[in-house]
Length: 388
Ligand SMILES: [Zn+2]
Image (cartoon, rainbow, N blue to C red):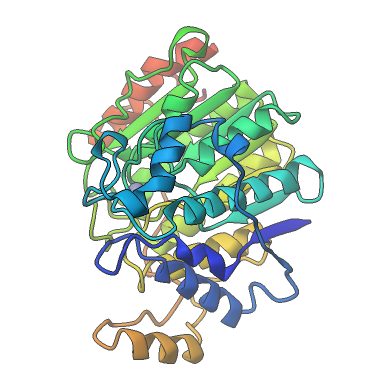
C-alpha cells in the first residue's frame, strides 16, 4: 500500500504573492499528476492540523504563541517572523500546523502498517528552528514527524535531504541523537544560504558521526551529483541499518531554479527518487516517507519533478519522453502566458555517471573524499577504498 497526502487546504501556507515559496507549485503538480493518470484510483488522504503537543516535540511554547499572535501583532524579529524570508501571513499558525499534520499523517500511515510508503509534497520545511522561523519555514514538519516516529516503534531513522540548501533545522534537532542519521547533499555553504553543512559538521556526543554533509560546487550537474550520492549514501545506510528512510525532496537543485546554482535536471530528480526507493527496499524494509521542500521554478520544474516523485512512490514510473498533457499546458498557459511550457517529462539530459573510484580529479571528487574521510571511520568504513 502507498499513501498520498493531499488537500487543497494545504495551499493556505502562502507567504504572499511576490514571495518565491508560492503554493501554486503544489496545485500545478497535483494537476499534472492527475492528468497523467498517476493518481488514478489513489485515495488522497486529507490531513488535520497537528496539535500543540505534537508541535512541542520540536518547538518552544513561546515560539508557538508568537506564531499564533503574529497576524494580529505584526513582526516579531526575535522569532524570525516578519522578515522578507518569513513574512507574517493570515492564519499562519493554522496553515503551518496543517503542513505538519500532513507529514505526521504520512508517518502514521507507515508506522501503523497501513502503508509501506507515503508522501506529502506540501511538507519538507527543513529550516525551521525550535524558537524561530527560518528560510520560508515556520514549523519543521520533518523533525516533528521523525520525533513522533522515534516514540512509535522506530529506533533508527535515516533522513536524506536532497534540497539545494543544507537541511540545517533537521540536523540541529537530532545533532546529538544517534538514532537519526541525517545526510544532506547541498550547494556549498560558502556560496549559498544558510552557510552551514560543511563536511566537518558530524554530530555531537553520542550523535557524533550521525550528521553527514556533502557540499557540492555551484554548477554541479546530474552525473557529478549522482556520483557523490552513490559514493556516500549506500555505504552509510548499509552500516546504519535504518528501519525507515525519510527523504526531503526539495527540487531547487534544478539548473533553472532562480534561488540557487546547482544544475540538476528533472531527469536527475527522477533518478534520485528511484534510487531512494531502491535504497529503502534494500536497507529499510521498503519503508519510505517522502516529503517536499524547496523549488522555485514554479511552472517548468516543480510540477514535473514532483509528479515523478509521486509516480515513484506509487510504482508508476513515468518515462521521460512522456508528453505533457494538453489540458495542463492549456491551463497553465492561461495563467502564465509568457512562460515557455515544457513539452515532455524530461529535460533530455544524460544522468549516466561514473562511480567514484577513489581518485580526486575535480572539485566534486574532493568534496566526496572530504566527507568520506570525516565520517566513514566513525562507522567502521574505509574512506579511501571505493569498495566501501
Ligand atoms: Zn531549498
